[in-house]
Length: 218
Image (spheres, rainbow, N blue to C red):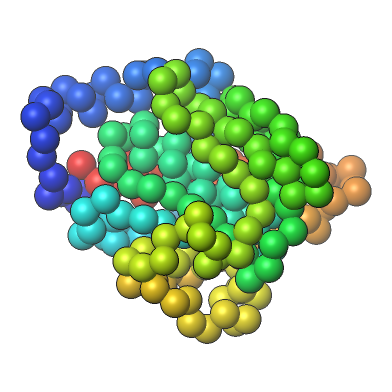
C-alpha cells in the first residue's frame, strides 16, 4: 500500500475509516459497493503510475483529456473526484478536449444511473451541476478545451483517456506528468440496442479503476 506523506490536525486513520460513509448519497454508496470489475495486469501498471503521481504531489491536480471532452474524460474526472472524497485524499480533478463540443447526454445518463445527482444546464454546451455528497461543493461539468481557463495551467498530470487526443496533442503545456490511460469510446453504441449497456459498462470500468487508484493511497 502506498503511503501518503500528508498529515493534518485530524485523526487521519479514523477519518479515513469513516470517510466512505460520510455525507455520500446512499445510491452512490450502493453503486460503489456493487463494483466488481477485474483489472488486467497491463491496466494496473498504468493505474499504479497515476497513483504514484497523486502520492508524490501535495494537492495533486489531474486533467483528464480526450478529443471532444464529451464522454470518457468527463466520466474519469467525475469518478476520480468521487473516490478522492471517498478515501479522504486531497486532489482536484478536471477535464478537457482538443476541441469543445458538449458533455454527451448518454454519459450524463450513465452517471445518473450510478447514483449521482445531476442538474441540467442550458444551451448547446450546457453546464451540468454534478453532486455526490451532502455538504460538498458540486462539480460544474461542461465541454471545454484542456487549456481552458477553468483548468490548471501548470503542475498537473495530463491523463490522456483516448489515443486520438494523445496523438493529436503530443505536448500539453504546463503538465508535469503525462499518463496514457486509454478507454474504448462508448459512442460506438450510440443509437443502437446496446447503447445503455455499453455506457454503463464504461462507466463501471472507469469507476472501478479510479477506486483502485485512490485505494492505493493511504
